[in-house]
Length: 125
Image 1: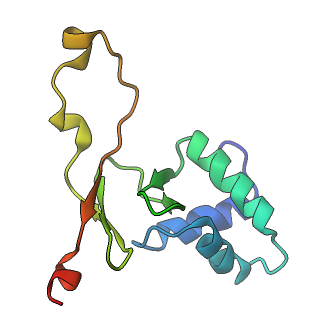
Image 2 (image 1 turned 90 degrees about the vertical axis):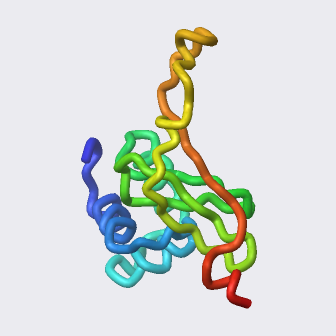
Image 3 (image 1 turned 180 degrees about the horizontal axis):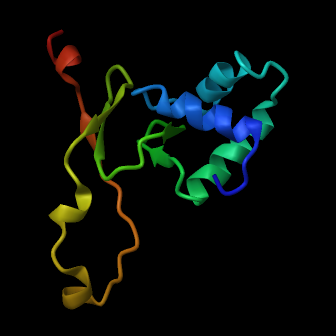
């Protein structure tokens, strides 16, 4: 970790310890179990710094809140518009694009794919 601190370690551990994609307030509640005096502002600042450093992923799925993912391996996400669950999917967005540099002159640094719809459980209802 670039700028190690007990707070950052707790935040990364909270994210790597779940397959959920929590919001900052959910991360805050989880981290408070081990560091009761941590502030919400500290969690927000550290989440932003960790995402900037590439230690975690920050996701915008269209629900008005940022979600965070401790799994930084290449993968995409599915957002259920009915229940709000964010799920990992093995599909890698980079594989879907043509040679953007050759065709358009773009040099892609990173990409993110979030598919939206209803999940298997919500489709049963």
